[in-house]
Length: 247
Image (cartoon, rainbow, N blue to C red; front, side, top):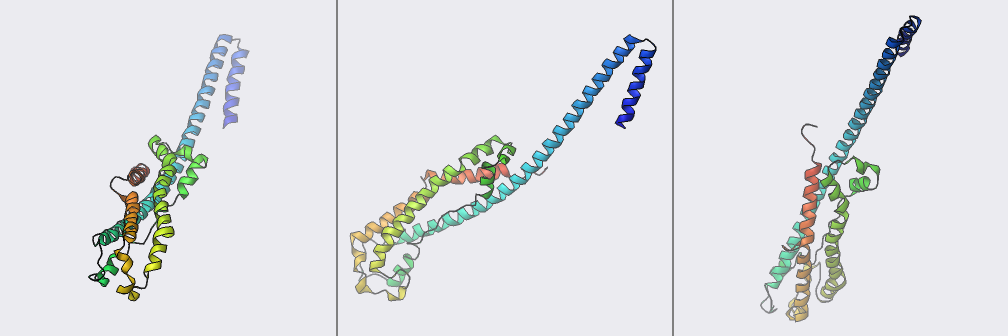
């Protein structure tokens, strides 16, 4: 088809030259050039539109995967925080007994109170999609500036929160559990007896429990910036990556 059009225009030019109608020839040639330029611009526009459409489709897929990843991360964080809350409640119930009088202590009640006091949970979110975006050119496909800023800062916010969990875990593993392990069975509660629990009346034991509480509060306390910031980031990423109904 293009060859036929070229031959058609060439024939017109030849006829104009043969008839010595040079003014009309130049006018026609100018018009032909304009048509060619318009054709090129249209072709470029179509190509740009196709590239834009491909990019938007890729962005849509990435956002969908990111949205699901952070929905899962939110569920995991909520679960971990609920366990921290349970551990804190366990510690508080022990503190409510201070100072402990082992002669009057209800052993079954104490066993139930301490149940979650030495447990620890950690938040380990999935970062597969985030890593893929940050470390590849796919990040350029994210058009929302607010989401881009959140993703760039996400790892720092996560590390800030995890530092508190790591600090709490290290204290639990290196100090509290060894101390408790020397004085009471950590798992087999049937072996509890009053003659071996005199340490519960000591200030050393009370200090260990208070230290444990402080570590948990540093993770989930109302004034804990790390947890509130982490929750904010997760919620914002979920909001900005949510698939649009019209897409």
